[in-house]
Image (cartoon, rainbow, N blue to C red):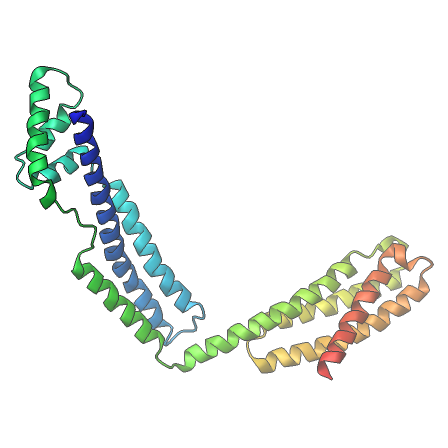
Amino acid sequence: MDIGKYLLDEIKKCRRKMNLAKAIDRGILCAAVGGIAGIFCEAVSLFLPFYHVHKIAVLCFLAGFIAGVCHAVYRRADMKKAAGRLDSYGLKERMLTACENLGKGDDFALLQRQDAYRHYERVRGEIRISIAPDRRHVLALLVAIVAAVGIGMIPSPVREQAEVTHQVKEEAKAEKAELEELLDALEGVDTESLTEAQKAELQELLDTMELSREELAGADSWESLSAATGRLDYKYQQAAQSLNSLAGQLKYPDMAGVADAEALAKALANQDTQTAS
């Protein structure tokens, strides 16, 4: 058996366990520290609208854990530290000396490795390199999690309003997406084949739709959203009629893009009519 290789493998095993233990422990400690920011976010959401506060709080814990692991990797143990850890079990620096002399082939180095091997085998059964984190760090993390969850479950009118505002914004976002399709179609109309009066009519239609987009963007309650969508439904019907009239005045409405815009306006008007019914 190659004693040098055997000792090297044992030191490497010890180093892996030490680094894993350090990564777990430091990750848990830093996650608890990051949790303080999460607790602060949850507390702030009691007084200020903060819809994504729970996700942000979780990210604070996660960011702390990742930062702790990265720090542990940066400050990871080397072979000498691992050998010193094994020596702490009564080997009196024999493993460290063997580690430093692994590349040497003289008789004295060989004797040192044999001596380290004999003493290591004698105490090997007693060596325990635990990867369990410090209980105090685990307790700190649990306290931080309980505090964040507890604060996050406190009823608050501000949180309820933030929930409503978020739902309104999501609904307004969907309405805006449909409106922007029509705006793109209107902007894509070839105005070269239009008269000045027809261009003015098309521009007026665009301006009207732009106002609706601004109304949807500013909606922050179900009442304001309902009012904005009600006006928009009427505008879709008016747009369909205006584009139908404009298409009838053109020799080739398909080529100008008016027909596509008209079809889209009709589809949106019919969709809103069916939804209302």
